[in-house]
Length: 156
Image (cartoon, rainbow, N blue to C red; front, side, top):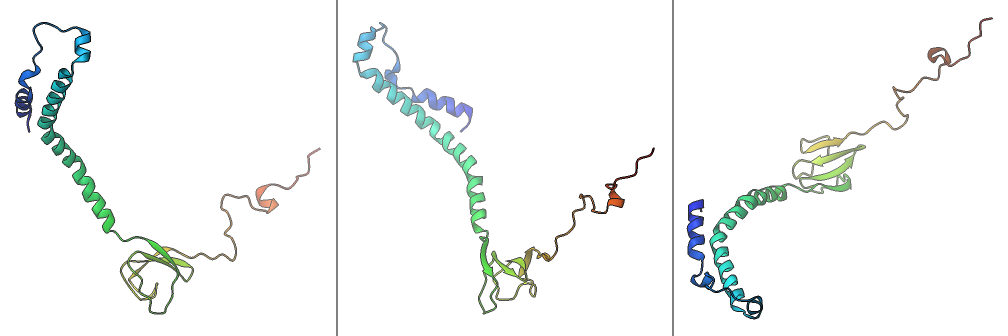
């Protein structure tokens, strides 16, 4: 619906009884009479009818892409951690995460194969060697001669 059609709809929606009487009623008469409220409600309803297609079109334009995005997200596999990998013929579905050889593996498709022996798995977290912590590169060394922390004799 374009602007001209909207103007025509509004012009046609105005009820014939909307025009105010020639003599202005008092405040008391306006408060006690229900006719103006009914007339206003009919006018508002007719305007709403004219705007309904425009509003519906705007809602569809805004909501349509969001519905498509939600459907796309719901089609994605759910990532679910299933603990340590068991080599007992269990079938792992796409998105299953398991621990194997100290690392975390995610199934790219439904599989019964063992992680790190099949292209059905993707390594997500690599295991580390936890026997000795790695030295910090930003820390000063404990060697006094290298870092200058030993006391030097004072000159006389």
